[in-house]
Image (cartoon, protein in one colour):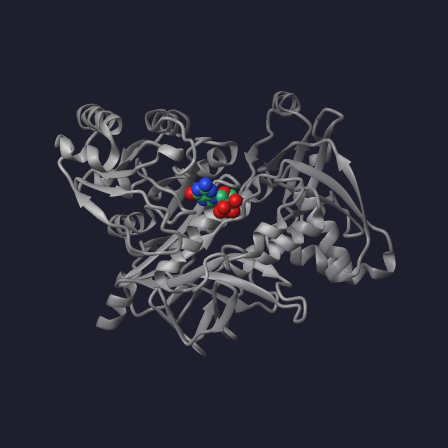
Length: 527
Ligand code: GDP
């Protein structure tokens, strides 16, 4: 038991989020470098050769393949065992990001110092706050001309609604970037473009000492003295409890590309984050430090390997220790099973593993039985982890199969892709599977659907856009939807379980439905 405790306590599992191009990949590479997980920075993924127009589905596929191989990376650093979860950059995949964040205990937000908070930062940040997990900010690219650090912090506070606490403070930027001042250690780390090297020398200083001028110059020293006085005077107190509940974000300035400020960031980050946290289940909180294994599925990815046509379910271990060949209970399926070929993904290699602990992510072959949110645990435990909520689809298409002879493949493809959580399938009331209505959160998913049905299931489809934007459950079980008085642009549909729903073209039609059908009870979409 005692070795379990140590193994679990030393784990740190976090996700990195950023607006595309802020430097997520570069920072990840440098972090891996410290763990010795890869020897060559730049081998995390071949993304640089795959910069592309977002509407190009071939590239999406390429990106999907690439971001999956690097979707979970594990490395050791000092006494810690670190799991980094990668998140897709494109906004149409933010649902995917949300699920990934469900598997993380904290998040690192990378911000470009010349741009500040960007569209995708805002969106991803919102997703983080849904779970109140700690959020650490890395303000990147200080070796380039940057905005004022005060402006950047104010923007984060105003736009994202989280308090900030700068752990270090930049001295100049771009050509004039001299380094950072570590506020707690009272040290200057002078900037040198030590690309690929680990050691950064710190100099302990008294910033009021004029000798400092030799290191950073007279002007910079004056600015630094004023800035630090301002920060110490006006800035709030550092409060670890507020960090751990996602109310205060520690901020680090650095430059991932030149490997500046990355290791100090990693060290402080590891000090402040927590080991795996208890998870909520229907029977109460599940303590990670036990002998009893449990996990939940947060991501399903099919056909990652073209040659094998496999399907992998990613699980976050929530408690105990996983052992190869161990018999587990799939709660939703009500069946005992052995998880076959458990793997861990290390940068580009997959590795079959013998054991894993709470906090780790494992991928197992899925014969088509898992769904997102499913619970797996060792008997005699019996509980269900709280589900992963589904985002309401905002775009709808009617999907028809072109060759009706291929009905079986069509149904199989559609249901498997739906199980992965990329799309949601609906039918006309009382309708069959010949013609389905597909709802998605981001329209790119339609492209992915068409491409995958053709390439993986050999099925051609036709898609017609539908004008709906809102979806609601009908809560009244006894109510016959046909009797409802609705606007002509409202449609009655059902999901594959027979639950009845309404889709609306606009908010006005939702109000119409509520006002003209007093008995009607509508509920927001979500699992
Ligand atoms: P991602 O889209 O967030 O993963 O961003 P990348 O890590 O791919 O970085 C986008 C571009 O910014 C690449 O050309 C990087 O080389 C560059 N970049 C990343 N970090 C830095 C940095 O600290 N300084 C500079 N000058 N460029 C950087």
